[in-house]
Image (cartoon, rainbow, N blue to C red; front, side, top):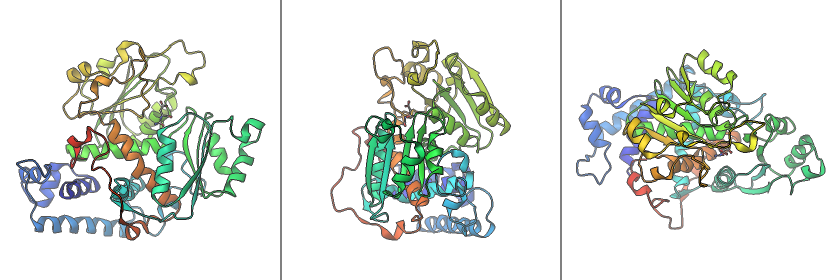
Length: 434
Ligand code: NCD
């Protein structure tokens, strides 16, 4: 890992500056900044002078100080009130909807997620949640959300008890959400809940005083996924020298039932001057209440059923799976080939610095026409960097909701076991770049 690169990228992200603006602020030539941002093993890479490092640290410290004093603007919420209180749902530390966040609170959460990176990468360990127990209740299919929430809690020193599906829970015997939630609160210290009905997780939250996290409520929201998606976009953009403000995002697929896009478009609309290309098969378009919300925030929305039109020039392509299990009489069976995001189209219509995302799972069955596997070796495909980011982001959510975010930094010790330097065989390309 290259800490100089990480250091400079994190600084640009925190200061919300492009490479041009950042080099101006530092009073150095853009070309010099570029060489400091190259991977260490590149022949052209240069170490930045110690003076520059000191100057950047001073700017960051100054910004943090200003944020504490002024309590306004991005990343500048008043430090006196803990983040959990500022993002509270009905006064309590739950995560039910992305509407609980503004730009400042999001940026603060991302700083906690950055702090978690060495733990997520298995270089450090922490026990700040030692003794705490997470109850994980999944009444719908899940692999990554359930396991990554569990792994995030364990990596902070807690333990996890879980139950999956209605069949093996007392809800199959007719127990109400209220009773289930109240009972669980006596056993565990936080709940992560996925449920097929929109609004059901909020009902769990109303029945308890322990933190409840919405891990997906039917076609409603999936806030932790959208937060990790935005965190991924920001990290990829800081590598590419781009800003979220003014970017062009294409969302493709089942925009009617896809809860990840419902949460993500709300979060992105906190930024300024975005263009959204919404590409959906007829009858699976984005719900009107979300279109209105995005338009009210001054963004441009183009709806189309043509993938070619939607992908042209996009900075981010966010593909989704057809949520067939939620259909109520929709005629469509799945994607037709015109909706498949595949390499030939991406090469023809997108840029070298476009990023390709998907909340996963992608439907890999023959004829599914979901995001194509022919992009698997394309460096623009960010889907596994996206899943990896689920760990630090979910760790940050737990730390904030359970009030230990200020203990994390001093709790860290070196990990005692040997772990691979990159977890996936293809990640070496991004070693030091991510
Ligand atoms: C999504 C979900 O469950 O909403 N998956 C996830 O959590 N990453 C998307 C999907 O099921 O298609």
